[in-house]
Image (cartoon, rainbow, N blue to C red; front, side, top):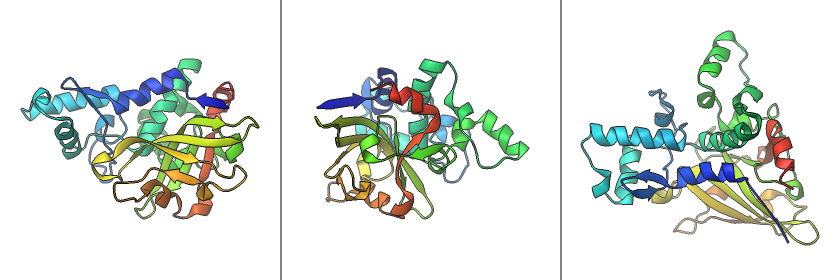
Amino acid sequence: MQELNLPEIAWKTIDGYRHLNLGGKEVACPYFINIHKAKDLRAMVGKGTPEEIEIEAKMWEKLKGVNFDNMSVSEIRQFLIDKGIGIDCSGFVMHVLNEWYKDNYKRAIWGKLNIPNKSILHKIAYMLKPVQKLGAEIITNKENSKVIKINNVLPGDLIRSKWKRQNGHHVLLISNVIKDESGNVTEIDYINSTEQYGSENGVRIGKIKITNPNGDLQNQHWLDEDSDGTNHTYEGFMVNVEDNGIRRIRAMEKLQKALK
């Protein structure tokens, strides 16, 4: 058996989201997406780093006169949700991959991705606020990524999906890959920030048991059920499934192949 994992620098960022340090407690970052475009700071539009989210949360703690020390984890999470502080799916993925990329190339990954709108104003906006302009659809489109088959999957690959919201895209980050003695993939672990799963929304881990490595991803065994038995992640993947699947960001390919 062979197990491939994301590098330590990527896990450090993931753990930062899963264990925000607020009030001396570890708080899993909730989901937030900036649908109404009414805010500007990265931490307030679903695009902040763990550090930015912690700073913003503590600022609101003081502004509202509350004390995280005296609040439970669930109360702190609800406070963040009420204030619109959290991370969306693409913001989470891009910050994790960016830390890995920067650790090797000493520059941000944003400069290696293409945006569809080539107007001068859009280019300037992208230069000023790159993370805010990189949604799930853009980072997994044909210009920035390529299709990967199950047996070629590596940590750092993405699963392009849809969302239950109309015209919405979703993206999941593959964190672990397990292969058998013959080199066939038997298990894929993924991490994503999701608005589903009720009070368990936000950054969470899921698993796909591969029953047929030569088959399609939708025909494998997805393990991430809600308390009522609903697998929201799988249901989202099945929306317009022909456009979904495993993608590899071209700028990450060299780093991923070094994991072998």
